[in-house]
Each structure stands twice: as structure tokens, then as C-alpha cells.
Amino acid sequence: MGWRDGCAPRPPVAESAEPVDFDFSGADLVGQRLQALLDHVTSGLSARAAAQVHLTDWSGGHRREYDDHRRTQEGILSGADVGAEIARLRAAWDEAAAAQVRANRDAADLVTTGGNAPR
Amino acid sequence: MSPPAGATAADPEKLDVYVGAMEGSDQALNDALAGLPDVLRSWNAGPATFGGRIDVDKVLAVDGAVDELSYLDLWVGRVADAFRDADRICSSDGCPAVLLASDFQIDAAGPPSLAQAVAEGEYGHLFVVERDGSDGRTRVVRLTVDTLPEGMTELEWQLVVEEMGLTGADGPLHTVVHGWGSTSDGATGAGLATADLYDQQGVEGATVLVVDWDAGDGAGGLGTPWDFDDAEESAQATGDALAPLFTAIARSNPDADVNVTAHSLGNHVASRALSQMEDPSSRFSVSYLMVQPAIPAGAATDDTEHYGALVGRRVRDLTITVNTGDDALFWYEARPFTPEALGDEAADGPGLTALLEWRAAAGLDTQVVDHNSDAGGGHLGLSPDGGQGLVRSLTQEQIDQLGGSSPQAEVRRWIYSTYSGPDSQIADVIVDHPAVEAYFARQQEAGVAPTVADVERIIRTEVFPPATGPTPTPGPTPSPPTGTTSTTTTMPPPVPAPSPGPAPTPVPTPTG
Image (tube, rainbow over all chains, first blue to last red; front, side):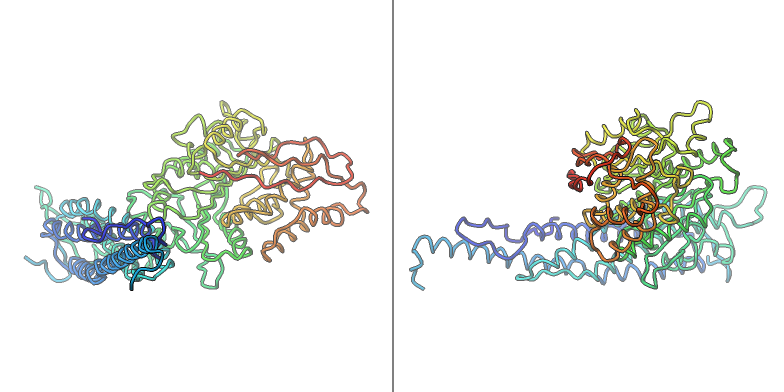
């Protein structure tokens, strides 16, 4: 799944319009990296859960150390909620895209009406 | 069934299967994090009109947890080894698949936490912190590989170098590699002196990594060629064994600022490691200073499998000191069937020429410093102190270039192009002179570019003051180097001239 599936498409900047103050390319890079991280975190947790079948014969104090450390660190992964960071970036993308669409429309109105459009 | 108190049970073969099952996903997760905090910081530094800032601390927490879990998965393999190593008595039919051991016996696996393992010295046989940097000075870590590290996976190297702070994440990483017969103290001293130059130039967060390999220290003097052969083989094997170390750095931080200085046989170590490492991003590169390299002159172009990094983009900038009067390399070549060494080849010799041509074709910057210095019997040394002005200046140049340029390099090139000549040591005397060294040090500390005019004055008043006899005067006007390869060529002996020519214009730095 792409990080901005369902987001507004990146709008072009109309010839007579100013670009909005948002780095769409930079956001795309960051979004892709965060989504890749989230995907790998998820698949890593699944892989470790599936691999527990190989540890069924292991018991004793060191096994308890393994279980404790695993629980603590996997808790940090789940608690970090990388998905929330991606959601915040998606919201920024959509707001910036909408602003660019408005800027394009305003610029087009200006060209069409010479700035005398009724308000 | 639970084992009795104080005992533990496992089937080590199944534990190994677990480790194998986790390795791929752990490596992939670590790769996904490589360089990510820097990407996020860069993003956060941009405009925030529409929000979208990312919490870098969250990602750093994920990074830490991923490292811990990756180590935990590898630790299960250590537990398996401890089970196998534990003494036990089995029936004549052999041991069962599920083995019983005491907790004490399995403690040999060490703690399950990476941070705890490093803190408790589980890797103390490999890494020794010589200067921890807590006083604000540049950190120095010694990697001891007299016994080659075996059985460490690339992922384990990566986790350990990250935990040890050896990935260049906080500042430049400078690797120094000693030559034949160097002691650990000598190698460490060179690392500390290199670190001092980072402090002198105000570079923050740097780490110097001293590679302390089995170079036959204490094996005898230069008159024992068989020992030298052993050391040469050791250098090659060490280089091969350290390729995963550089792979780990490249995987963790592909854009790290990495400088390498290697002396004599140490160039086998550095060149082979850099040539055989893997770089998944193809972005990792180093600036490499080869001091009197005791490797075959044609190695880079004749044996690209082991030395090809020298003619590729992985060695972004390459500086080689050569001296046809190198006494130590004379002995290197005195062995039967030994090819000429790179470090005492003439500047226009076939090995150097081929290396320069290959690098020029790849658009890479190369500098050959052809000198006649007396230091170390013409063989120079690794340490940028102790009267080794040339090594010092070249090291300062490496550090300067982390910022993009090196004004000192231009002045030093002017000295060599103006005062060098066949068998002439005038340029070396100037560069090694305490007054010149002190001048360069003052300028570095002040962050002010040294000038040809200042050096001229020091030469007139302190290096060759009038009272000492005829003052050597500068020779032909230096011409600025052109193209991508700057070679300090041998010039005719100095002849009287009214004044030195203008300082050479900076060498254009090729991109790519």
C-alpha cells in the first residue's frame, strides 16, 4: 500500500499561480520511507510470532529473559505508532494540495476578470 | 515439562532454525531505518505552513527497539552455542535433541540486550575505547583484530558498530590503519594524534577508529623477510575479514563522512576491505590517504577483485605519497619475485600511471605527492605528528575537505611545485619545519586560510634565514593543475628567481 493512497493527487502549479509553501517531493520521500518502515515493523513482528514454533522446547531462566526482553521492545515498536506520523503527513499533503488548487483557481480568475470578479 | 530450578532446556538445532528464520526480516527492518532520522530532520527543517512535522524521537525509539530485537534474535543462536558447549554426560545412544544445562552454563551467551552486552564488554575483545570523548575531545576507538573475528554476521557487525557509535552518525569517522611491526601503543598514538587534528579544526562529533591488526609486532626488524611475508598475508586476510565492518557502516549510514589513512602494509587491509565490502545503496564513499603503500604498484588495475575500490567511486578522493628513495620499500622489493611497491614507484611509473588513468576516466580526484622526505627513512609514518609535517598536512587536508575545500592543500601544493626537484628535499624540509607546522596549526585553529605570502615569509625568515647561508629561492612559476588528476610532479632544482609565482588556482573538483 502506498503511503498516500486515498490522498488528493499532487496538483500542478498553474502558469500564473504561485506555488504553495509545501515540498511535495520531500513529503513523498518521507512518506515512502515511513510507510516502508511501518511495513517492515509489521512483517518483522509477524515473522517473530511465527518463528516461536521453533522455541517450544526452550524453557528455563534464559527463555524467560528472552520473553521479557521481546515483550518490552515489541511494546516500544507498537507504542511508537508510526502510522500516526504517516496520518499527520497525509493531512498536511491534502491541505497543501487543496491550497494549491485554490491558488490555481484564484490566479485563473484574475487572468479572466482582470481582478474585477464579484466577491 | 519444566526443567528443575536453576536449569534450562532447549533443542539447539531448533534455536538455530529460529535465528535463520529471523535474519532476513531483521536485516530488512534495519535497512528501512538506515539514514531515516537524517531524512526526517531535513524534512522538519523545511516550511511548516501545512504541518506534517514528524516526531524524530519516535523513530529513534523504533530504531533502538529494532536494534535490541535484532540482537535478541541473534542471541538465541548464542544460547544454542552455549547449550552445545556445555559439558554433559549422555548415554551410549548419544544425547537427546533437547539438551539440559544449568543456567550458569548458558550464561556464556551473555545478556540478551545489545546495550547491556556492549556495556558489559561482550565485544571488548574487538573494540577498546581509548578516548571516550566525554571531555569534548574527539573519541578514539581501537579495533583489535590480531585474531580475526569469525562467525559474526553482517547484521551483528551492524548492530555492534551502531551501538559503539562507529557509523559516522554524529560526525566524521576517520579510520587509521598501521603498517608492519607497529605496536598497539604506536597505532593508538597515531589515532590520538589524528583525533587532535579534528579538535584543532573544531570538528564536532568525530570518531577515530584505529585498526590494530596482527602486523608481526615484535617479530623483528626489516632484515627478516620471512616475517614480513607473514605480516603481508596477515594484512590481506585482515582486509578480507574487515569487509563486513565497512558493509555495516555503509548499510547503517550510506552518506557517512569517512576518511581513511593507511600506512605501508596497512594499505592491504584498507584497500581489500573497501574493495570487498557491499554497499546496497551505492552511495558510500571515502577519502583515502595512502602513506607509502606497500602493495603491488599494479594492484588496483591488475587485481580489481581485491583492490578495485582504488579505481572506483567508493574511493572518492585518493591521495598517495610516493618516494623512490623509500628505504623500507627497498626491502619490500628485495624479496624474490616481488612486484614493485606502489609507494616507491616513480610518479610516472606504469602502476601509478594506470591507476591515475583509470581514476581520471571515472572522473575521480587523485593526488600523488612525490616527496624525498627523510622521515622514517623516507617511508614516513602513520602518525600526523612527530616531525611528519607532510602526513600532518595531508591529514589536515582530509579534514578540511569534509567542509568542501582545503586552502592549506593549495599552499602545500605550491610549496611542492615550487621547491621540489630530483633528489631535492627542500620542499620536505619546508613542510616538516616546526615554524610552518605551527603556522598551519594556528590557521586551522582560527579557521583562517593559510596564504602563500605568509609561507614565503616564514621560509625567508625562519626556515632558511639569511644567516644560514644561501637562501634557496623558488623555482619556476607553478602552473595550476588541470583536469581531474593533480600530480605533484618532480621539478628541476630551484633556480634563482625574483619572486615566486602566484598561488595555483584551485583544482576543479569533478562531480560524480
